View 1 (cartoon, protein in one colour):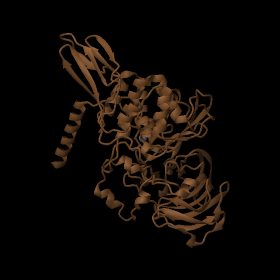
View 2 (cartoon, rainbow, N blue to C red):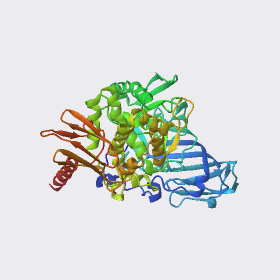
View 3 (cartoon, protein in one colour):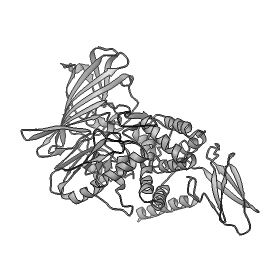
View 4 (tube, rainbow, N blue to C red):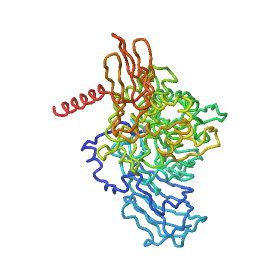
Length: 567
Ligand SMILES: [Zn+2]
């Protein structure tokens, strides 16, 4: 998620002023992992979370099991220091208070004895308090304590930018996924807690309901709390891969009509992704969607949906389709570092035009691409090649590419597809997502991927050098510029990149009634023009490149915005 940046109003900030601020460490997901964390194998997390809507607080009891790749004397976890810790246990024995500390969100636990490779340790952390309230979820995240139209509690978490450490002790880094997570979410009866993975049952006692959910390899920010007076729609989908996928949607009772229409979109969306990319990665758990008080977020197998059942001329819910795309690009293929976030968002965003092309044809495909094209800013490269935290990517004021990881990322994928052809393009994406060209249910698991991995796969599968392509589109801010000059009876074309790197991108030119393909191997080409010939560069709209008219449009938009703000 996280399209569209939102600038916070001071009234919103004031509303949260009673909460202590997050430390910089807790507010940012993806800080470099401590050496101890790099050695850890996070096997299981068993989370008991009691959600108390009245006091906007929670009680947590987390039992975390780790293995290690190196001898460890200490375990470093991440947990917001504003959630006071009641007790820490190691392998069932209470740890003296002096043996653990959490000054700034880095919870350091001194082990009573060294943990050797091949051994396991169980850490239990009991804590409580008011989790950080989202200022504007999901963009500025945390907990959302909302109410349904008839005044019942409606609670959600959305912590992509800030991380899992806002409500449970975890390793807040994209590569900090536990192998298995059990959620035991207690809520006042008769509320429903819709969770990640498989429903393991519900127990009710003393006016509280405890909902048990189990998921495998959930992404760290994909673990979510969703509580409300939900009703559920249930169905199943017969996959082209032979398995049957449970379909579930939790919705507010007053929105049943909209929920039913949305639910009817699940099967065609699944079929598109399964036929275009490959098997739904979590088919043995579920395709799950829950109605939320915030716009949306790609929580694994329990996608947050808050698009209000809006309709567009395209005839499908693009927010649901975008969030659902993240089950492939985000939850199955997870960025190794936040610097690789375009893999989630560029590919995830490209899935909406692609869905339209598959479902309806070229008009919707190119219309959707043009809407993205008009928003590309080109102020910073999509990829820095260095370690970055989530906000370093999203915040343009920190030098990040911001929304370009969505819009430009999608158009770069469109351009790559045009260059190497559908077969090589989709094979590249499939291998990047699954780690195999032949994914079938049961023969793959969620994996981590980086920009360099993606580039290597594309080069191998495409059977050609593509360094020039990725260098220009991912590592340079400005777009390649196709400069055309007419001289006498010919049209001279030359590619210019910001750093003068080579750009041998073939170009089609329409001249009169003919289409001429120029190989541009040295970045130059020319085509003969007869008197009176008209011409179009790239008439099939295959190449993302600098367009002066788009820059003028954006300058105009900017000026209008300033004018409006000034009046
Ligand atoms: Zn997204």
